[in-house]
Length: 409
Ligand SMILES: NC(=O)c1ccc[n+]([C@@H]2O[C@H](COP(=O)([O-])OP(=O)(O)OC[C@H]3O[C@@H](n4cnc5c(N)ncnc54)[C@H](OP(=O)(O)O)[C@@H]3O)[C@@H](O)[C@H]2O)c1
Image (cartoon, rainbow, N blue to C red; front, side, top):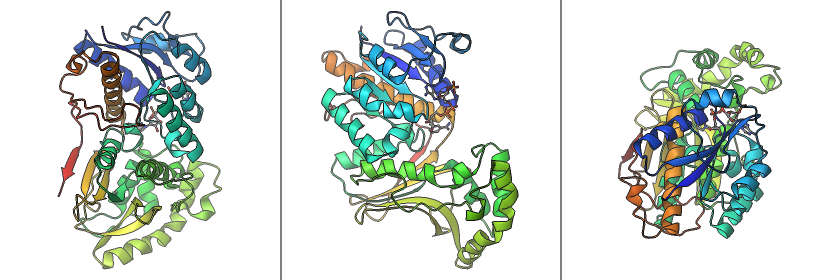
C-alpha cells in the first residue's frame, strides 16, 4: 500500500491543530493514511519504534507524559534517513535551529512541509543551501503557510512564475496584527479618532499581538514574508534587513525593558503618527502598513502608505491579510488573495495541504501506476519538474480554502 511517514516537530498552536487534522484525515482515508512516526516538542518526544505509526488517539496526554528526550535535528535526520517509507519532516516550530538543519534533511531526501519562515527568510546563503540540497536529492520543500497562513499566496506566485507570466509588483498587508491596528486606527468608514497607543493596547488585550507588541511593530515579520516572496519572484535578497523596513517603535522606546513599559510610554508619541492620519484624511485616504516588492526595479520595502478609500486595502476588515499580484497577464487589475492570514486552524490546513501535495508527488514517482485519487480524492497532479524547489504548480487542491481568491481581471 502507498504511504508516507510524517515526523512532526512542534506541537503548539499550529502543531496541535495539525496533528488533529491528520487524525481526522486518516479517519476519512483509512486505506491511505499519513503515518505519524514522531511528535516532538523542544524537550520531549513520542518516537515510534521501528517506524510503526503512533496512535493519534489521546496524543496530547501521551506527549505530556512522554519522558523520551527530543532528538536534535541531526539525530532526527539520521533516524529519518533509515525510514523504510518516504518521509516528510513537518516543522511546526519557529526554531532557527530547525531551519538551519533543512539542508541536512533535504540532502537525505527528507521532504519538508512547514509554516516556519526562518529557513526561507534568513541569510541568502541558507536559502541557497536548501535549494541546492533539494535539487541534488530530489527532496520536496513546501512552505505555503509561511506567508499568509493557509491563504494560497506562495502557490499562486509559483503558478504565475512557472507558467511564464511576468510578475511586476507584489503589494500587500501581510500582518494580521498590523492589519487590525490600522483598520481600527485609520478606518475607511470615517475619520479615525482613536489614539494609536489605545488601539495597540486593545490589540494586545484581545491577544492579537505578541506578548511584547514591539515584536509586531518592528516590521520584521512582514520583512521576512517579503523576503520569501521576493526570492520566489527571482530577486536575490541578502536578508530581511537588507531593504528598508519601517519600524513603528518610537526610537525613545526601543530600549524599554518590557512590553508593559513600552505600552506605558507609547501615548507620548501618539501625536507623531496622528499627523500622518490627518494628512491622509484631508485627501480622502487611509493609512495602511504594507509590504511591497517592485520586481522590475528590484526594490523591496516595508512601509506606511496612504490609499484612496476605494482601494481594496482600505476596506479590509479585522485582521485579514490581502496580497495583490500585478502581472503582465493580469494587466491593470491585480490578482488579489484575501482572507484570514493567521490562526491555528487555517495555518495547519496549509501545512496539511502541503503534505498531501508532497505525498501525491512522491507516491506518483514511486508507483507510477498508482492512481493518485487513492491518496487524495479531488486532487489533480501534473508533475512539471520533479526536483523543483517549493514547486506547487502540480496541484489543484480539492481542499476547501477558507479565503476568497478574487480574480479581478
Ligand atoms: N499561530 C499562527 O497563527 C501562525 C500563522 C502562520 C504561521 N505560523 C508559524 O507556525 C509556527 C508555529 O507557530 P505556533 O503559533 O504553533 O507556535 P507555538 O504555539 O509557540 O508552538 C511552537 C512549538 O514548537 C516547539 N518547539 C520550539 N522549538 C523547538 C525545537 N527546537 N525543537 C522541537 N520543538 C520545538 C514548542 O515546544 P515547547 O512547547 O516544548 O516549547 C511548541 O510545541 C511558527 O513558525 C509560526 O511563525 C503561525
